[in-house]
Image 1 (cartoon, helix red, strand yellow):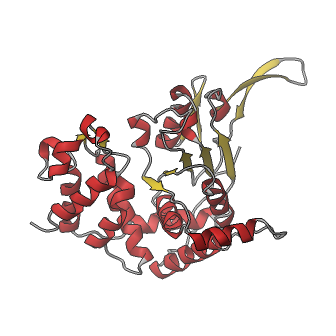
Image 2: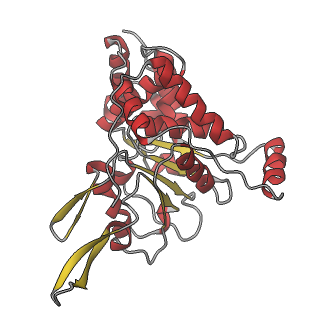
Length: 334
């Protein structure tokens, strides 16, 4: 089983935070063409101690991006390919019977692939809801319970999941409870013509690029701890609360929310907005949170937490359209 990583004893400075984060992004960019916005959001989710869900059609490099990030962070990486026949024990592990040297038979826990620092849940919405739910305890409590025994997961621990758009065949919608456990949902877009040319050039030649380790698990934990100490002014915190409250149709002043939203964002959305905004500020070299930091992380924090009603689905309203309306309508100061 993976050993726990302990944070570095020295205090991390905001300057060191920014330099380390920039080094990680630069190393990932050596392997991954484009997708700078996706890399930034996934890294923010990791530094916030949260999990990220990446959605996009097959072939956009979602799996390679996550694997490359694991190499750059020097973390133990595990990949789980979700399929309709995958069982919960295939993820968490199970008790196996083995015979001791003296002839006795005992049960021993065999850890599953969830026991890693960075777990890639590949095409998570291709597995059945029963198997999807096996991740719930791990993502929230960072423990696994098998046969009434609870086992701690290694630290740091992150789940980075990919999913295909639901309109594609053979997919099962993720339940709202599991969606809410992802700090971010990041949309992976199709590359531009120039990026596609570069992708083909890198992947059809003889060279095989791999990311070099530029950070450790202890550094990631220290960066997480620093991020939580970034101050946020009360009026910025109040703005976060107003955004979340106005995402609920019964309490909103935003017309699109009243017309197209069935359920608004949960309290976890407010936590995600604040934590991610703190890290966004550190990326920009500031040790305080601004309104613009909140706006920068709003879409990734909220888009999977807004449940559209029938009219919203029928009119093909995007959650991002609702979020844009929230950011335009909800006043920053009152």
